[in-house]
Each structure stands twice: as structure tokens, then as C-alpha cells.
Length: 148
Image 1 (tube, rainbow, N blue to C red):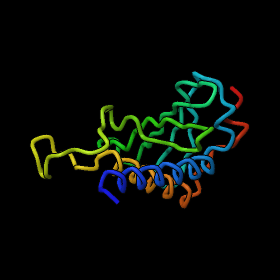
Image 2 (cartoon, helix red, strand yellow; image 1 turned 90 degrees about the vertical axis):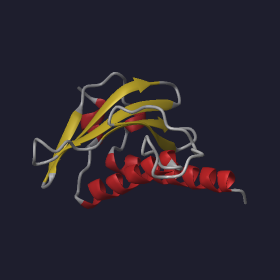
Image 3 (cartoon, one colour; image 1 turned 135 degrees about the vertical axis):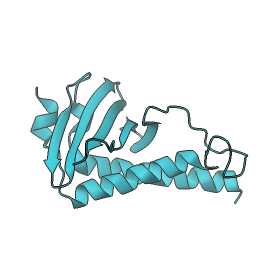
């Protein structure tokens, strides 16, 4: 298998697992109208917020962010395109950055400090973050998401 095909297979696998994790964290996400106000859940280590930005017939664009116990240390903030028919969730923005190529030719480290497989790495980070949220007991109740 070529490195590009291998990378695509890994990326799709990660996006499928992220969809499943996001469905556990926020059941009923497919029914939320957009735009919707941010909903937050508080935990021991901080607060996680979810906001539905756009809703199409088959996709939802959400922003997931976390604020920690220290104000000077910003938590992660991601925009995630959730495709309900394909059952995948893919990072489309991280900390305000929006353009991620599937693969970069230059070695690391480089001037932009971009990893060769930046897109895959971001989706792995989302997976780790979602697993951590679930392990900490964060859950958005279905009723909270679908009603104002």
C-alpha cells in the first residue's frame, strides 16, 4: 500500500471513531437546529462547550472548546464537520487555523513547523480529547441540545 493510501485509510478510520465518540458525548446532535447557542458541561478539570454553527441535510458543523482551571492557558478549540450519512467527524479548524493539507512534502521540523501528516494528527488529537471528555464523565444531555 502506498503511503498516501495508508494515510487516507488511517484518517478515515480516525474520523469514523471520532463520530462514534462525539455521538456518545452529544447524543441527538443530528437533530439540533442551527445556529444554536453554546451548551456547556462542567467537570472537575474545567468546562467543555459545544455550539452548533451550521446544519445541512446530512452534515453539522460544531465548535467544541474547553476552558481549564487557569485563565492564562487557553484550552483546545476545534470546529468539526460531522457527516451523519457517512458517520464521520473531521476537524476543519483548530485554534483558528483552517487549512490543513492531507500530506505535506517537506520534512519536519520546517519553517512553518507543520507535520507531514498534520490533518491525521489533528484528528487523532480530537480522538484523544473526546476519549478524555468521556472518561471524565462529560455528557451533553439530549434534551439540553435540542431545546433552547
